[in-house]
Amino acid sequence: MNINEGFHSLTPQFVEANNSFAFDLFKEIYSSNKEKNIFISPISLAINLAMISQGSLGANQKEILKTLALDGLNQKEINSQYQTLLNSLSYSNNKILLSIANCLCIADSLNFNSHFLEQVKTFYQATIHKLNFISPKSIEIINNWVLAQTNGKISEIVDKLDPSTLLIALNAIYFKGEWTNKFNPSKTKAEAFYLANGRTKLCPMMFSDEEVESFFTKNLSAISLPYGDGRLSLCLFLPSKTVGLDGFLGDLTLEKWQEYFNQPWPKQTLVAIPRFKLEFKVDLVNHLSKLGIKEAFSFNANFQAMINTDRKLSLDQVLQKTFLEVN
Image (cartoon, rainbow, N blue to C red; front, side, top):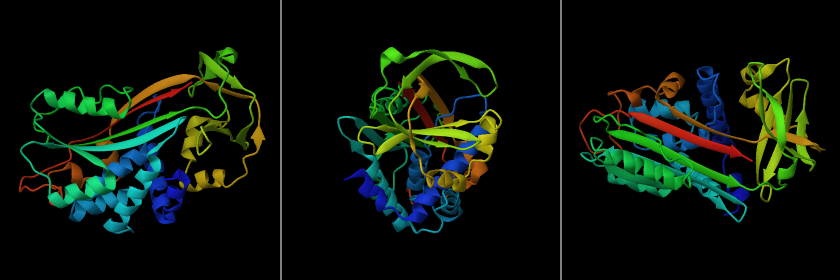
């Protein structure tokens, strides 16, 4: 499927819901991680939570869908839209590789509902693992799954598991892209990079005089660097000194984001960006609780549409680990 054709099949309501959740999630995580480099994949998490909502009932399901801003859609519409999105994001050619994978790990003493299994495999391309969480082998199985899905970039997402664990949701996203206009390595040189706290750090800076789309206001500068055939791009935003990172992010909303991209982005030359790599790992339970998902993490959670049991269940962990390298 042409990646653009797939995206055009998504409804405006669905697209806006995912964008809204992305901004809510980022601001929540940033509020308690201001001294760290943050790299998250909101769409990966949204897909994972939508899959979990498929097996939830009552207040549990309502909280998940409301947090995802999808409470205006029925389950059939949600499943269909995420299936379209996943098909669109599974994109590969000789210059770009993009893949998303979902996994649910359940205690081997439990059984998934057959209808739930059929739905998540059909619409969410999910992998299912039944594990003995008491055994160290479970850690190895989970980490090997993540290693395979990220082409070896992330080798470990868990180092220990609570033996009482019953349910874990995992998601992996992998992207490798070749710049449309490659940076010349011979032009890379050490330059000062200004941190949010005002200090500077010497880092390798890549330079290019190729034309790129750009956007400028009195408060920020932005550029769009395309990958491969130009269907996917990396957008970089640099707040002005007077606004700073906190000011920029405090003012960043879905409406403001849409306003930026509704403006013309004229071509400009002379681009300088740092060459860097970073990793970020987060258990999202506390963050999602603050955004409104509470039942799923308590023993009041209703997962009767997911698991055939009368036992009280809760979602124990929602893990995301990311790796980013720009060179």
